Length: 285
Image 1 (cartoon, rainbow, N blue to C red):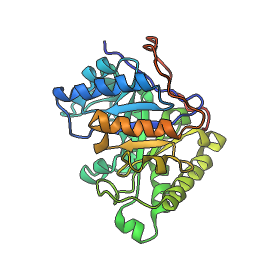
Image 2 (image 1 turned 60 degrees about the vertical axis):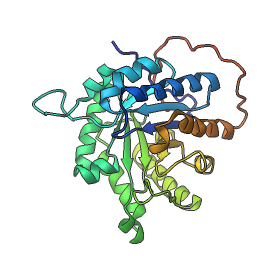
Image 3 (image 1 turned 120 degrees about the vertical axis):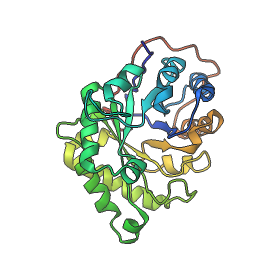
């Protein structure tokens, strides 16, 4: 049985999630091992998650142990069945995953996923005990038309299943026009959208909506991470290309650590106890 680590935020800490997309062969598992070792050595004040391709989840979970979490990049709404090529949330959990990315822009655009489909998958994730990282975001044309806030609000309304609780949920805002482009919205634009997302969550969940982590996902690198993560209602990042190499991903993690007030990096840190932690976002940072 694969080793499984469940993220915890108590009080709520940033979540730094790496999405490897369709990258990674067995040789790249060395990067997982290096990331996990760096997290143990640095003890950053953040939860760390890597979502490799499904072919690597079992091995990645074994290498990561109880140091970082491993997640999937998608799941099917059904538990099992005649769905060639698909993976159920139960399969991801069995392989060692603690979370799953759902509704990524590349799935919505390239595979025609609707909000209703994302909600069905999120329901499968909560049925299985996986954290859902639900992606939302506007296209360039929607942004140009001044519809960014409406698009984000509507996608949240349509992508979250009835009965979902704040502890089962992370929202990742992806400005689609920024992904992979090297361009980013201004700090004011990011803060405006994330503030709107926060109010949308509070409207739906009441005060508990303030405990849901909102990640920024749009060309985050070590160079701009400090500026982005310092913004209000930015509770972490969903990182693409910069998560493929341990040296690049660790640089972002160290940026998070450096920005945390009152945090001192220890000179040494012993191996953490072998325990399974609960994923909980019960308190705002």
